[in-house]
Amino acid sequence: MTGITPKIFDIFLILCDTNIEALIKKSNISIDREKKNLVVKNCNNKACDGLFNNSVSLHANVSGDIKTAAFKNLQDYLTKNDSNRTINSLVVSTAADVTGEVMIVIDFDLQKQRPRDTELICVYWDNYTHAWSEEGCAWKGPSAEGQCVCNHLSSFAVLMSKTPLRVPALSMLTTVGLSISIMSLIVNLAIEMIVWQQVVKTNTLYLRHAAQVNISVCLLVADICFLASSKPDDAESNGQTSVWCRIFAVLKHFFYLAMFFWMLALSSTLLHQAVFLFHKVSKKTYLRFSILLGYVCPLLIVFITFLANNAGEEGSYFSSDTCWLVYNGLLKGSIFTFIIPVGVIVFFNTFSMLVVIMKLLEHHKNDDTQIDKEKAAAKTVIRSVVLLTPIFGLTWAFGLMIMILDLTSGDVAYAVNYIFVILNAFQGFFILMYGSLWCLVLLTMGWCLGSEGEVFKQTTIFILTDS
Image (cartoon, rainbow, N blue to C red):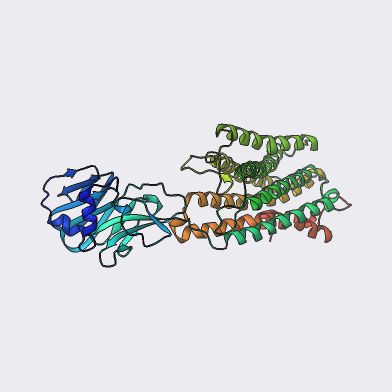
């Protein structure tokens, strides 16, 4: 029995007949003792530290000294009554004469780092059942990983689950939701092809529909990659190699960013028109600017991030569990090369739409029919941006919360996972509803651009008063 002294092993044998706290209490130890495998502290201020990097704080009415001991290797010899859990700390025992209610806080130095979504269980050694018991002890959660709070004195330790927690039916919801989103985007692109020639009669509408097509394509590819890289419930692997997982992470990073940058192109060009009184700019100029902003900018972000994280190294650029970017804390991790640009775009879109709305309210009826057409078309673009920006932004706000919240945090973490899946599923559906399908309905009713050149005749009522 290497690694454990005979004295400690003797204590272990005695545990079957008496509890270790009684032994410590009976021992005549008045000064601190530290050996290779044993530390005993005689504490008189209700707090003990230096217990092999563990510490104890006792909150109770205590008469006399508090004696606390920490044992190395003892946990390896105690019965493991649950095959799904493993001991992940030293054994720490506290003995004292207490009256009334007891609260003892033990800060354990965990032997192994807790994997994400893996539960820790605070336990004490039950001398009657000769097994670990959770009764009267509670884990303080992921914010204080090694901290346990118990309402009695005993010999304490921390157990760790061998498998992480899973969100029930999440894989099924992801598959169904993303399938709905993918089908909606395909239908949206088909409608755009059908009505394209009839609805792009002005520069503003050309910009709106060109941006909508590119947003749909980006989201479609990203959703397909998301679906292909998702894992089934209670599965550790979906057969994805590290290479494929890296490829999916890069593609999702690029196309989700490109989707937001195309929305930025849409709102920024509309802002330019509003500020400069709808000066005419050619369609080619719009398209070149939008392509540069919509594809080149996200490409540069992804490329630089990939190189900065050791050429897309696993654990640095992407996580093998999610095939997505890594979150390592506040402003730490590759995920912030996605979150920060998205946050800036959402803020800019909100600001630009407020400016455009104010400009439209200032402009009175103009005799120039073309300017009136551009103004009416601008209102339909505003509707798209105003509706889609919060939806996309809110979706990825919940996506960030998923990375921040551990499933051991409780019901809130589960709710955030479900909300993200639902919002992510309906992104494509919202594009379909507030984009091509809406225009197709209006077109069949004679309200979209017709042969007489009227631009959404019945939709020129300003968006804030439009029912």
